[in-house]
Image (cartoon, rainbow, N blue to C red; front, side, top):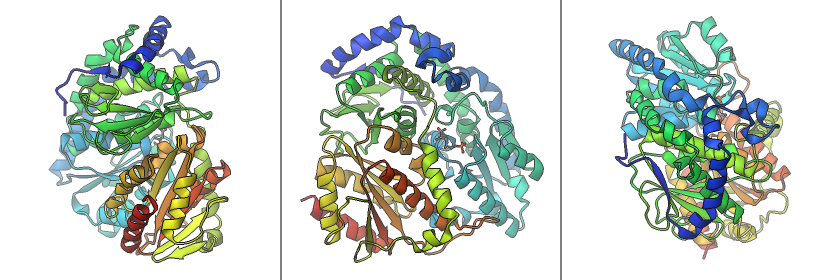
Length: 540
Ligand code: PA5
């Protein structure tokens, strides 16, 4: 699980190091790291204080989460003795991203459900239910995706003659609707998490540790790794790695580089950029400012190798290629380091790193569509159809001509110093190749390009898209649903929910004046192949 490297941050770009130095001095002189470690809610100004006062317990989780370890081990042993060794996790954003990185890094299997794609959920259901336990994780206890998964799995267990209550483990905050439900339904076990830690800072709470530990990861080791750097990160010294990282980000942002391009350089940690993406985007992307994380495939990838003055290249692992900053250390230490750095850069940017004011808007729009089945079913007619791709554009987006023409016009109209966001409401496993579009579009347009699976990104970069720098152009990809799944005791199917989420977010982005181009694949495989060809043609 470790990189074998010392935990540290190196600003390898001399010019950036020079600009960051005064900010690091300022943070150290303000006592910001020590105050953060001591959970001082006044660090981000009076407006942020009420929220911050109930969101800072993550600085001591390496101590307070210890008692969980025995509880997790005991439950795992009990389940294994009953032949239950397949763990499915239902959770969005902060309730799934950390366990996904932990288990991928440690090489233990975990099926993560952070999707509303009926095909992907059906595949998870098709696994061996006799051996399955589902961890239903939600801090609020009211997240629609997670509740839908809970309903679907409970019914599937019952249909298979399995006592569902014995196969459902809940992780939630005290007093949440899920904690009440778990008691009422007699679910196997409820882990109550520390309510004074927000979702994206919860990697070392029950939200990160329970699913990963039940799946077989050595989660005690993560706490050891975090404990080993806790004092360093709390030190009010300019060379504190968290201060260094925050100062570098802050200096780059001041100089017009609001994008942070993240590439792994052999850290041994699998998928860390996906976790960091949520932490940075949702924490900083608000009030028209913030840092946009761009997770890329490698240091050779477009966007990293050729990043311009609007982006900073960050290596997770040793410095390599065009990296300007390198961050090293084992996973548990990196979780804490990036959380400190994000909270500290929030102070430099003048924002509250603990709220997510723009996430609710898309949820509301999706709910309104679900309440209006006619609108959802019929929807607007496509402006153009090209082969297996139906084309829809928001106001001002050209939909003239063939798909390649539409894409060419869309790319050319995008802000050169802004970004293109590809948002795929598809099956993250079966349609995995869709993510290759990120590099292809970045290469052919020269624009920084992000990629997100919907609705997963709505709990991550979705906040930045609406709240951060308003220079994004949004390419939504939706797809036909071959076989839909009912959500028990709900008036909608999973496919309808997925569709409403895409349309709802698209509406909110358009209301923000952002260009939105939606491509609906009436045949997923054929449409995707046509889309790849059209991107190549449009970018020539
Ligand atoms: O960081 C956050 O607060 C969010 O991304 C949440 O983690 C996400 O929306 C899931 O929320 P919940 O755990 O309440 O289901």
